Length: 503
Image 1 (tube, rainbow, N blue to C red):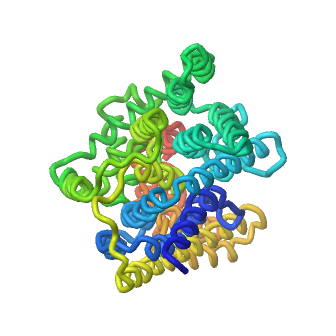
Image 2 (cartoon, rainbow, N blue to C red):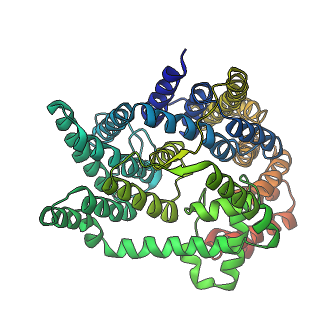
């Protein structure tokens, strides 16, 4: 395969197949999308060989040995130079091809999301516990869907403006309308703000741009209380994560796998000092702020080194007209600071597309066969890691299905133990195994597993299960200790109070 063909194939996988990847194979969509991303990495490495990208990927694999439970966070950083290099070279070689892919990705993602909203496709939205339907499409999350569309819409707008064929202009217009409609129906306040800003830049005539931007802001005006609560929640998350900043954290970070469980400790400290904020209690999987996430995960030293290398190796070379580039960066900044782009592989790739549309390497990558082969081998190793994560997630799903649908505790335990052979998501898996052992009448074994689960994931639901296991094992003091920890992590919880009062 020629390098040009490899870059085109990689772009098709990343911009079209990655967002559309979904199946009932696992409960969580991230392992599926991570595997699709990892399968594109060998194509990127072959299509744009780079010494820096290969070294970063090798460092990522070494870091995986230290933090084996965080393959996605490490992969997102380690794969970024390789993917960026391939996209950047492809944009310089055939910008129209990338724009066409972006346009069709918007059409496909929007059409599938709207089809799911009217019941034509079985996309599950019950996990959000909202009184109204939301659009998730193949992203599993309305915020991720809206973020992807917001970042890719500027490419559709630029494509429509430069199109010479009438069919392309029509297709671009339909993509813009469908994408904007889908973003509004996602019911995200931040997405509505970003869309309004994009409308002001996409439409050159102010007399038309202002009404369209106002229309995008209508959902915020109709739900102003929700907007205030969302802003308050984001501010709360920022304040809690700031508690995790220390001299050591600022230098080296806590590790990408430690932010979520450590957040529960920081939150408990914050709520102990500010009990009036208990109504804002939450358990986010990420800080909803990319700057906070990068500093907390990797520290300032690696972040500063990455910025230094980027400044030395990249130059400004916009592949988008000024209006569309500004729109892309406004969406990029709002989403990075208010939602986080690194939480989902699909939003992460959209963010890299914006970067590739803005910067290019100062020097072209050397066409070295040995370097391409080294990068290819490293990328294949990442694909194996992603496949192992998918297998773990599959057995996790089968364990849940056996426990909840068929009531087969033995089969559920078999799948849980198989999943635990892989170093992914151990906190949730140990919690599930502990609850299964408790149901099987083995409370002491259950308590052992739940103690380890609470160390990895000190969530109130884990402490609740541990308290129940200790009581069933005839250890009331240990049950009270677990209930007190439960109450510390979830102040005011009525069940924890009742357990303590009923000793």
